[in-house]
Image 1 (cartoon, one colour):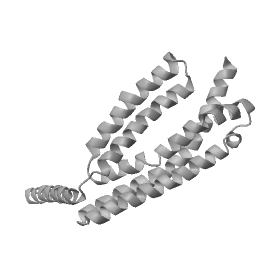
Image 2 (cartoon, helix red, strand yellow; image 1 turned 45 degrees about the vertical axis):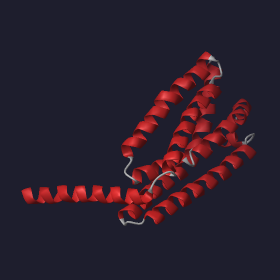
Image 3 (cartoon, one colour; image 1 turned 135 degrees about the vertical axis):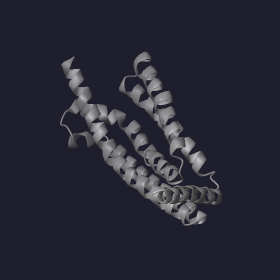
Image 4 (cartoon, helix red, strand yellow; image 1 turned 90 degrees about the horizontal axis):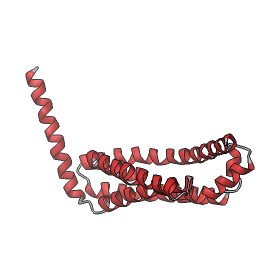
Length: 204
């Protein structure tokens, strides 16, 4: 029992480290997309904002696909970076396709979340994230992992289903956006905050 538990801990540690390293790339693109899109909208450049979204999403996706392919190519040896057990290496190799899919999805979803934040859709993104994670990912992962006895694969597949839905919603919303309208909305928000600032200064 202890041996199996230790094996699972080493397995999840290896997978988490690999996923965490690649996720840091997407986090950087997330921040860049948020700042760039908000700046372009504030400057009244809808075409530049739209172009920035396409560029940052495509670059992040391409990098994620490359990393996922490298992980798949090294699936039998990649775990030895973190641990030396053959059982762990075999388990990691078995789960590497799911890891590769997670890397690709995490190359798109965080970037589009950054775009949405840059557009001022924070509440929308929050609802999508919470709904997909707690409403879809966790319950489905629990059912697949424990009810259908798929174990770690089932839990991971459930979480991936939530991430896929989250990504689809963000892609659909982002690429149907009227960027000229978003420029107008950003100006309204800017004027609203300027009016509030002026009122505060006059009161003081």
